Length: 169
Image 1 (tube, rainbow, N blue to C red):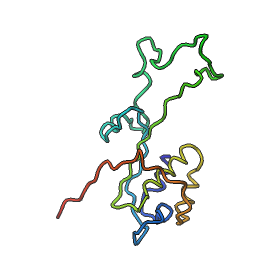
Image 2 (image 1 turned 120 degrees about the vertical axis):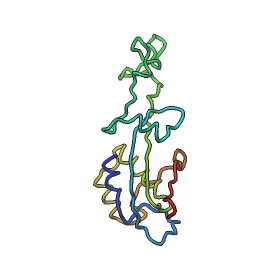
Image 3 (image 1 turned 180 degrees about the vertical axis):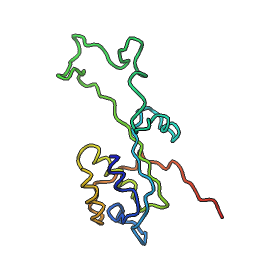
Image 4 (image 1 turned 135 degrees about the horizontal axis):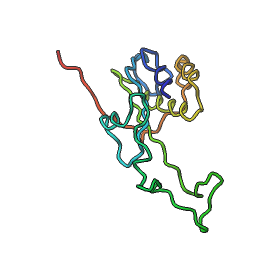
Protein backbone atom coordinates (compact mmCIF):
# COMPACT_ATOMS: atom_id res chain seq x y z
CA UNK A 1 0.00 0.00 0.00
CA UNK A 2 2.87 2.37 0.78
CA UNK A 3 4.45 1.64 -2.61
CA UNK A 4 1.13 2.42 -4.28
CA UNK A 5 1.03 5.73 -2.39
CA UNK A 6 4.49 6.60 -3.71
CA UNK A 7 3.32 5.99 -7.28
CA UNK A 8 0.38 8.38 -6.89
CA UNK A 9 2.28 11.20 -5.18
CA UNK A 10 3.39 13.94 -7.55
CA UNK A 11 2.11 15.91 -10.53
CA UNK A 12 -0.15 13.65 -12.63
CA UNK A 13 -3.20 13.54 -14.82
CA UNK A 14 -5.69 11.99 -12.37
CA UNK A 15 -8.43 11.34 -14.95
CA UNK A 16 -8.70 7.75 -13.65
CA UNK A 17 -9.51 9.18 -10.21
CA UNK A 18 -12.38 11.51 -10.96
CA UNK A 19 -16.11 10.83 -10.89
CA UNK A 20 -18.40 11.35 -13.87
CA UNK A 21 -19.85 14.49 -12.25
CA UNK A 22 -16.45 16.19 -11.95
CA UNK A 23 -16.60 19.72 -13.34
CA UNK A 24 -12.90 20.55 -13.03
CA UNK A 25 -11.46 22.04 -16.21
CA UNK A 26 -8.27 20.01 -15.89
CA UNK A 27 -7.66 16.60 -14.29
CA UNK A 28 -4.02 17.48 -13.65
CA UNK A 29 -3.29 17.79 -9.94
CA UNK A 30 -0.26 17.68 -7.69
CA UNK A 31 -0.65 15.24 -4.84
CA UNK A 32 1.80 16.42 -2.17
CA UNK A 33 1.26 13.59 0.28
CA UNK A 34 -0.49 10.24 0.35
CA UNK A 35 0.24 7.98 3.30
CA UNK A 36 -1.30 4.91 4.87
CA UNK A 37 -0.79 4.32 8.58
CA UNK A 38 -2.13 1.36 10.50
CA UNK A 39 -3.60 2.45 13.81
CA UNK A 40 -4.82 0.46 16.77
CA UNK A 41 -8.57 -0.18 16.34
CA UNK A 42 -10.38 1.71 19.08
CA UNK A 43 -13.82 3.24 19.44
CA UNK A 44 -12.54 6.78 18.85
CA UNK A 45 -10.63 7.95 15.81
CA UNK A 46 -7.08 9.12 16.66
CA UNK A 47 -5.98 12.66 15.90
CA UNK A 48 -2.96 13.44 13.72
CA UNK A 49 -0.84 13.90 16.85
CA UNK A 50 -1.97 10.59 18.34
CA UNK A 51 -1.24 8.83 15.03
CA UNK A 52 2.30 10.22 14.96
CA UNK A 53 2.88 8.97 18.52
CA UNK A 54 1.63 5.48 17.57
CA UNK A 55 3.95 5.06 14.57
CA UNK A 56 7.62 4.17 14.75
CA UNK A 57 10.20 5.72 12.36
CA UNK A 58 9.96 2.71 10.02
CA UNK A 59 6.19 3.19 9.69
CA UNK A 60 5.18 0.20 11.78
CA UNK A 61 2.53 0.30 14.47
CA UNK A 62 3.87 0.92 17.98
CA UNK A 63 0.85 -0.45 19.86
CA UNK A 64 1.17 -4.09 20.79
CA UNK A 65 -1.12 -6.75 22.22
CA UNK A 66 0.84 -6.39 25.46
CA UNK A 67 -1.24 -3.33 26.29
CA UNK A 68 -4.36 -5.49 26.06
CA UNK A 69 -3.01 -8.39 28.10
CA UNK A 70 -3.24 -8.83 31.81
CA UNK A 71 -0.27 -9.59 34.06
CA UNK A 72 -0.67 -13.32 33.41
CA UNK A 73 0.02 -12.77 29.71
CA UNK A 74 -3.41 -14.10 28.82
CA UNK A 75 -5.39 -11.87 26.48
CA UNK A 76 -8.41 -10.37 28.15
CA UNK A 77 -10.54 -11.17 25.10
CA UNK A 78 -9.46 -14.80 24.88
CA UNK A 79 -11.58 -17.33 26.72
CA UNK A 80 -10.50 -20.83 27.56
CA UNK A 81 -12.00 -23.71 25.68
CA UNK A 82 -14.61 -25.69 27.56
CA UNK A 83 -16.72 -28.63 26.52
CA UNK A 84 -19.61 -26.29 25.62
CA UNK A 85 -17.67 -24.29 23.00
CA UNK A 86 -16.82 -25.25 19.45
CA UNK A 87 -13.23 -24.73 18.40
CA UNK A 88 -12.12 -24.50 14.77
CA UNK A 89 -9.03 -26.21 13.38
CA UNK A 90 -7.00 -23.04 13.84
CA UNK A 91 -7.81 -23.06 17.57
CA UNK A 92 -10.12 -20.08 17.36
CA UNK A 93 -13.52 -20.29 19.01
CA UNK A 94 -16.30 -20.71 16.44
CA UNK A 95 -18.10 -17.45 15.76
CA UNK A 96 -15.47 -15.32 17.49
CA UNK A 97 -14.24 -12.54 15.23
CA UNK A 98 -10.63 -11.50 14.98
CA UNK A 99 -9.91 -7.83 15.57
CA UNK A 100 -10.26 -5.70 12.49
CA UNK A 101 -7.37 -3.68 11.15
CA UNK A 102 -7.75 0.08 11.00
CA UNK A 103 -5.88 2.32 8.59
CA UNK A 104 -5.61 6.09 8.34
CA UNK A 105 -5.08 7.46 4.84
CA UNK A 106 -3.74 11.00 4.69
CA UNK A 107 -3.98 12.88 1.40
CA UNK A 108 -2.66 16.42 1.00
CA UNK A 109 -2.88 18.61 -2.09
CA UNK A 110 -3.77 22.15 -3.17
CA UNK A 111 -7.03 20.77 -4.59
CA UNK A 112 -8.69 17.47 -5.43
CA UNK A 113 -10.96 16.25 -8.18
CA UNK A 114 -14.53 15.20 -7.39
CA UNK A 115 -14.29 11.84 -5.54
CA UNK A 116 -10.52 11.66 -6.12
CA UNK A 117 -9.71 10.74 -2.52
CA UNK A 118 -12.47 8.13 -2.29
CA UNK A 119 -11.25 6.53 -5.54
CA UNK A 120 -7.64 6.52 -4.31
CA UNK A 121 -8.68 4.95 -0.99
CA UNK A 122 -10.63 2.28 -2.89
CA UNK A 123 -7.50 1.60 -4.95
CA UNK A 124 -5.30 1.39 -1.84
CA UNK A 125 -7.74 -1.06 -0.25
CA UNK A 126 -7.62 -3.23 -3.38
CA UNK A 127 -3.81 -3.21 -3.19
CA UNK A 128 -3.89 -3.96 0.54
CA UNK A 129 -6.10 -7.03 0.17
CA UNK A 130 -4.09 -8.28 -2.80
CA UNK A 131 -6.60 -7.67 -5.60
CA UNK A 132 -4.21 -5.23 -7.32
CA UNK A 133 -0.43 -4.82 -7.54
CA UNK A 134 1.72 -1.72 -7.83
CA UNK A 135 1.99 -2.43 -11.57
CA UNK A 136 -1.83 -2.22 -11.71
CA UNK A 137 -1.68 1.15 -9.92
CA UNK A 138 0.68 2.50 -12.60
CA UNK A 139 -1.55 1.07 -15.33
CA UNK A 140 -4.66 2.68 -13.83
CA UNK A 141 -2.94 6.05 -13.41
CA UNK A 142 -1.69 5.93 -17.02
CA UNK A 143 -5.08 4.82 -18.39
CA UNK A 144 -6.55 8.30 -17.83
CA UNK A 145 -10.08 6.95 -18.01
CA UNK A 146 -12.78 7.08 -15.34
CA UNK A 147 -13.54 3.38 -15.61
CA UNK A 148 -10.00 2.17 -14.91
CA UNK A 149 -10.01 2.50 -11.10
CA UNK A 150 -11.64 -0.03 -8.77
CA UNK A 151 -14.81 1.01 -6.90
CA UNK A 152 -14.46 4.03 -4.68
CA UNK A 153 -14.45 3.79 -0.90
CA UNK A 154 -17.82 4.53 0.69
CA UNK A 155 -18.24 7.96 2.24
CA UNK A 156 -18.67 6.67 5.79
CA UNK A 157 -15.38 6.41 7.62
CA UNK A 158 -13.82 9.16 5.52
CA UNK A 159 -13.76 12.69 6.84
CA UNK A 160 -11.97 15.99 6.38
CA UNK A 161 -9.51 16.36 9.23
CA UNK A 162 -7.78 19.63 8.53
CA UNK A 163 -7.62 22.52 6.07
CA UNK A 164 -4.54 24.73 5.90
CA UNK A 165 -4.51 28.05 4.11
CA UNK A 166 -1.40 29.88 2.98
CA UNK A 167 -0.91 33.14 4.87
CA UNK A 168 -2.14 36.21 3.05
CA UNK A 169 0.80 38.13 1.61
